[in-house]
Image 1 (cartoon, rainbow, N blue to C red):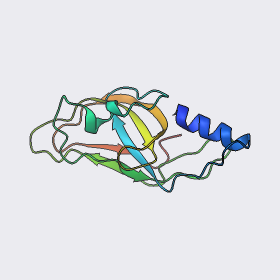
Image 2: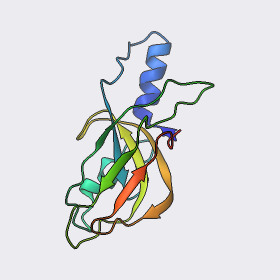
Image 3: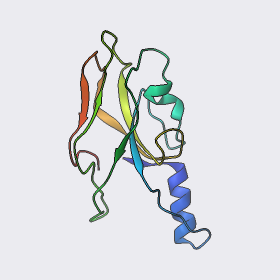
Length: 133
């Protein structure tokens, strides 16, 4: 999982006493059709991809466990994205992002899925507890 440029700058400013960083109240897990990169490109998010119908897609609130030995793991419980469309698949998903808002907002972290997945009608993409670190 990689930190976004936004988060790297906030952490540096906070640690060096330039500007205090207020932690986000909530974090949201998002699906992406390509790497959002450290720049935080929201246009790769599934909700913005124009190739397929995305009935039922929305970011999911997610919590992480406290960091230990330089690593934080999450989610703290299973999180599922279910394609509720009766007949259309979602565009292939290749990456995930952790954002500070349910829509728009700032990318905090991003990473690649182990295996890219096209989510068929009625199918679910599941993140098991502790699967993101």
